[in-house]
Length: 292
Image (cartoon, rainbow, N blue to C red; front, side, top):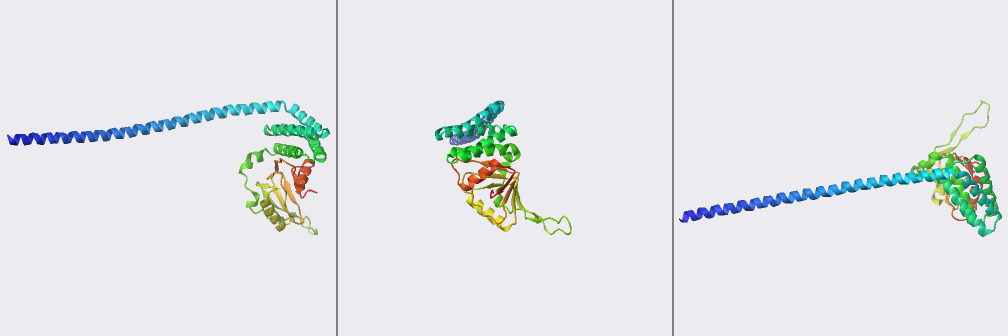
């Protein structure tokens, strides 16, 4: 009888152990399943969020793209009227008192900026007329900061229209001063008896330079003094209304086929005023510093 009880007790213990092991396995499987399900839900939420963000971004880009296109078309349609309003404001600023001049110039600057951002071209005669108005204002209203801000905006607008390729690349252009210029070379004489030898100047190409940066001015001055001539070709030239501290040798700096980007908020110093006046009156693609 004792043996039977012991056997029954052993069977019960084994059954309990099996139940515990099964429960442990079941708990483990449930834990694994819970982890998988949680992970799947997390991944699903992430994918849905990515899809929703992409859809919203795409939708927003499409909407904003359509709005921008519409604004460009609208600006292009009313460009002649807007250009006439600019000229009228410039003439009004020239003949009015200081208060009127400031408000007229602020309107003209804003309108020119709209034309530039919409990339609206104008006939050369219209540009010449506006340029003449701005030149007259620079001479007559040089003490008003808005005069220089309007002149800077007009220079940027006129230059951007002829250098759309540089406008697209300007964010990726390296700084000129971070590189050595291409060295100067001498050209062969035209005839055996010719006494003079032509010098092809050292040059920078496809880079950007800031005219009123003290550090860049110092580096450019150093390069200019080491080379018989120095030219910037197809470069982005930035001016922000500060002092131009270029110290050159006997040869001027030349700027050829460059994009000029001016942003002036106040009255610039004499060096900046001279650059602005020369660019207004001359050819943007053939400029030399110091301006004579």
